[in-house]
Image 1: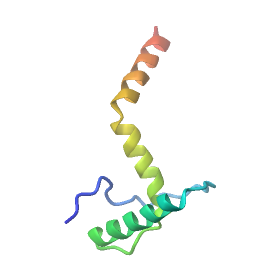
Image 2: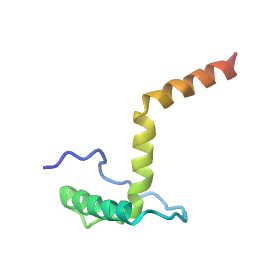
Image 3: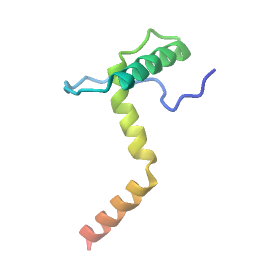
Image 4: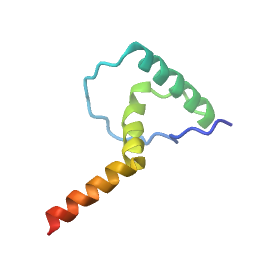
Length: 78
């Protein structure tokens, strides 16, 4: 089994966003969705639905961002 950074995608109510992606990034999202679907034993997910969890995971794992955010919150709280 492949260890992917994303897990099962929650079935939330979608919000429409218009976004242009480079073709190679779209191909990667399609491939990722196919692998994720196969690993989870589900139908291949819509690759566009991967964008939000990927961004959330990226932001949550960015230590520099977390530190900067804490610093801003501390300054605003003083």
